[in-house]
Length: 347
Image 1 (spheres, rainbow, N blue to C red):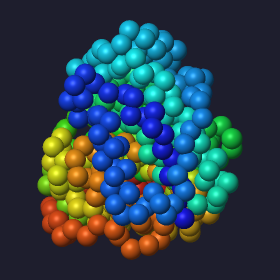
Image 2 (image 1 turned 135 degrees about the vertical axis):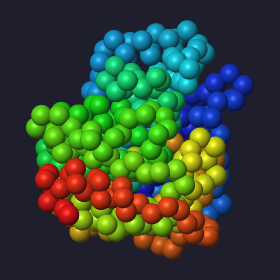
Image 3 (image 1 turned 180 degrees about the vertical axis):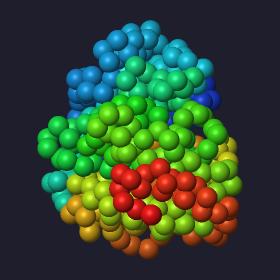
Image 4 (image 1 turned 90 degrees about the vertical axis):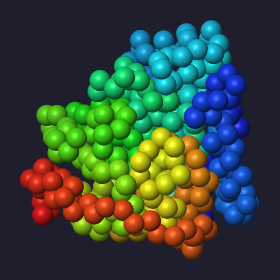
């Protein structure tokens, strides 16, 4: 079984004319795909109660939270050139944080992996809003996975691993935990696109040095590229880390259909990554695994999400696509290993 967290109120965050890429249609289409594959009928779907308005302050400063609240109260507006709010945004973004935290409660209650199906996404939202010098918030409001990770370390988990597979670097998550050694942030992303961060030399500060691990992949990377990365880098790295909890920032914009990126994964890679991360969580931390939705603006979400759920349910993939062949990642893998080998003992 897999537990899925979803609430219809996530659809209330929308732009005028619904023309923005980060629109309610993302979840509407995703839910329809899950129904088509009989997933919503088969697995437990849980909604959220009222938003916990204290949660944004766990990872964001008060001035930023108040700014979002005030701007949202005025109706539709843009925070920056990429990111909008409407009159529901403050409530909906806080509800997404509440849902992410509920992921922990349900994972422990049912002893099953959880997928938190939320919007707006969160991994670009840093302490003060836009993070690490990025020009915008990249469609994000509050950082969902960061609030969940913060809760886990607050209640005593010593090593929380976040694996971010969104095509864009999770600069907000990295910034929030830049000096926190208990949160190990591993981020696969396309090199050279928004937000422009995520160099292999960004490894964390102070006691957290070595716990921020970036894997910037070239445009054109495909299924074979990502498999190579898992085989040669992620598997030995995660086994070395020995996390107490595994969180996935689950972005689906690395799919070949996505209009905002230049990667070309098929839905098979989402099945492979979730299956192997679930296996590692079983081996290392009692299957403590929670995934939180990030980006995905085309067929990646409708094809990749069902396969992610299938992997978490330990069943066969629902969607079969031809394997996409891309460039080799050997050079990137070698460079990353050189940087992080002194911290984690992998060669």
